[in-house]
Image (cartoon, protein in one colour):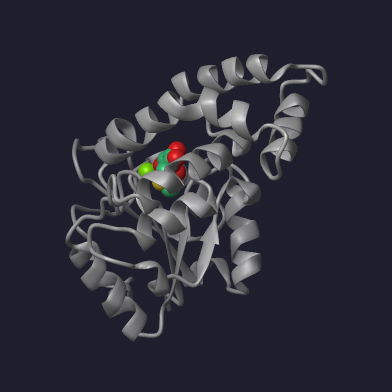
Length: 228
Ligand SMILES: CSCCC(=O)C(=O)COP(=O)(O)O
Ligand SMILES: [Mg+2]
């Protein structure tokens, strides 16, 4: 029996184009100024120290760190420090009303239905927990954040590593086969399956012939109560 559904964001609840055409360019545009203004203030000061450790350059200047962050953004590297800084930068955009978090129209009714069935809902994204809460809190469908009771980012590990899903299951206090993971990326679903989770792949765009997971196009095609 499914007791929790954990969902990815980009390509699953939300259009990849929102992340790549709105969020990422804003972070790219503002990163240098943001780091320069915030480098001596917490939590940015500690994050920059974490980045120095990550790249093994304890003496790196703020300018060198910005160059590293630019490289990470160009590679779409899921660095925990980069993701935390991006989340802080996006905050302004959401609070100023510059954009709303994109959510496919089939998502909110499904979240409500599953919640009414007593299923706990969680998010697992490479985006920081702050960025996740902003996207759902300031979404195109209003504040969806109250539907979720658990939020996970790369602090639990990378999304293509089975150990991350074992950690999440431990934190949820559930057996792995009681948790359903929704994602558009079959390598993430492979990792969740390796940890014993149930999986469903969202195909919002192109087909994925290499996938061996059940596939749906929309959240309203998912019936956790009927999972075999
Ligand atoms: C929380 S919205 C921003 C998503 C993000 O930064 C990202 O890298 C996409 O990660 P996901 O794991 O949701 O594919
Ligand atoms: Mg995704």
